Length: 601
Image (cartoon, rainbow, N blue to C red; front, top):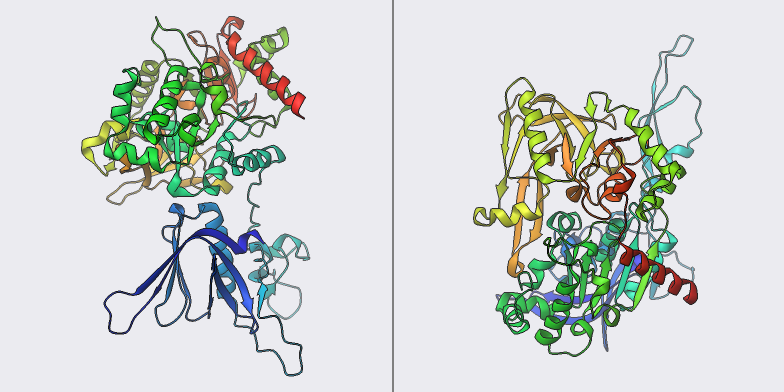
């Protein structure tokens, strides 16, 4: 069973009487198994080459420490004497499942000893899987109304071992606990990509907007060892979404336009070189915005710094993005060169895969429309449907549609002007940054600014997932309906998902230059009368208003339109079919990719 097994580095610490430091034994590349012994007690078993260690876990004595599980580290105190098993370099996703199973078994009562005359169980047996939360016994209160007759109504408490939604009960019983939503599962396509990543080969996976690329990328990150995996993206906002850093910050070579020898010298600086040498898996998100010349320069630097002639110095590349979305940012006199046009692309990428199942939008008409726009096709039907959206409502429950703008200046002017027009006092919230000297670097990577100014009635957008089950996700739209009377005066926001909640400070952590960790603590809110198309990439928005008259790049109209979850939540102003265009070289690349996929199926 996958949940009961880990592959990681193990350190066993045993206290030595009279000694200041414990005896420590390190086992690298060990397998850690969760089993049961002949007394049906949970056993932690560590296997590394000829070494085989077993630790019986008693419910009262064993303890799990999981504060750093996101970094792939945890500790298990295995006995009352202070003996510890330290786990490190674990894939975080696998470690989380393992610790959940371990805690579940420790929380259960100690099993009774085997009865006399019974056949003894094996010395070590596989442990049973954890029961899903909805199948564990739970206590629910069932309130009955006042029944006819002399007796009053009464409160009944029942222990239920079946899922709450399967509980047979008369219509007048009120169940006080909500059904839990099952966790999102990977589709067959996404599972295939994850399997390809686990094979160790370098992979590029793509797909249109809304196919779950970012969701899959987070699962991939969780399946890889954190010490040798570096998560990057082409922009700071995209990097923050997946908990990484920018590709430029990781590489440490600036723009990469300097001569190769100079770039190698920059990459060989102590802090930067350490990353290049430690990296075994490099993840790059939003690859469409990475310049092809920069990719070639990175590949040459990787081989030189790591002193290995293999493509990219032997690093496994996991690259994600859609070349039919936003292109690399270039100066007006420079020719755009995509990464797939880089000289080193073909020798670096072993597998190309495309996700085709759209998850953001469920309306087939809208999905078909977006597919046409993505390929630069604007038929009469597409034009008619988009022009019809101009009459859609731009306001629901006091929440206005967010306007997507092509230029950053338009966004700032619109938000500042609309905030000033509101009556009442401005409530200002200052961020708490880990290093005020690096505020520009933090601003580039954090989705919220150092100062957030709000008023009653301000249109806002969530910048972080708070509660996915309630719809409080990154991009959720709302309006400020009040402020707490306490000293902090935190804002109360009513969201389109019909949830009203006081928004508290949240923390973002990301890597800066030389691997240092930077953080910002701030309200996860930003003004949402307007937002730039570039900043919206990767978001799903409830209600969107788009002006496409100033579109200046291929793929820009598609990115803007595909932010909407439905045609009903979309309002397109001054639509012109000429703004729908796709780069011919990108279309040719995707035709070749699909042709190759058909041949290999």
